[in-house]
Amino acid sequence: MSLPDHAGPIFTQHDLGHAIAHLRRCWAWFIAFGAMTAALGLCALGLTATATFASVYLIALFIIFVGGSEIILGVNSHLWGNRLLLTLVGLLYVVTGSFALAHPLTGAAGFTLLLGVALAMTGVVRMYFAMQMPHGPSGFVALAGLLTTVLGLSILFGWPENSIYVLGVFLGVDLVFYGASWIGFGLFLRKG
Image (cartoon, rainbow, N blue to C red; front, side):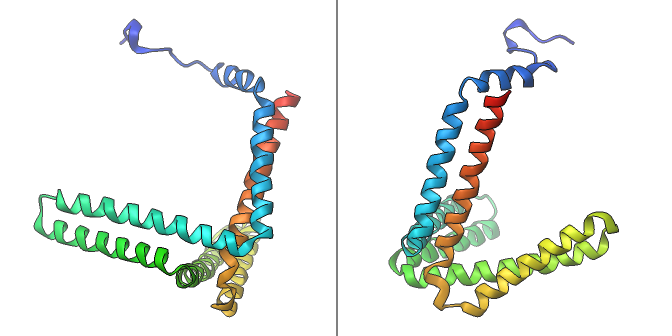
């Protein structure tokens, strides 16, 4: 079965090489974007309270958007049970997000608590899975699980006093590493 001529280009094995060659011309833009992102991360690490509030506002807006989407899905649902459940869940999301916008300190405390619990639980699950794995990679998975658990517990033991800076630190570290990865990608393209 053949595709019609207007179906677009057929991909071959050489397309990845062509794409990299095309991207190679833009290597400086990738490095500039990475440097800007890493610089924003360093700013967030220097202004952790401000970055925490920015994180709370952004998370709250996302929660409100998701809640509004749930309400729309609920109203348009054909089944009465789904309609009621989706609408109630959507309203809960909208109320939670609105509360976090109105009370960012309380929102930061709540999100920090959730982050600590999630990290501690994720670490425990990773260590459990490490015990189920063959000995080769299990050591790295167990170490990652242990570090994640310790990080989660350190957040929980410092809560709620640490709520003013934890989200900002996470945002800053994430932006620094994300920026560094783009710089690395740009340097890779430049060398090739």
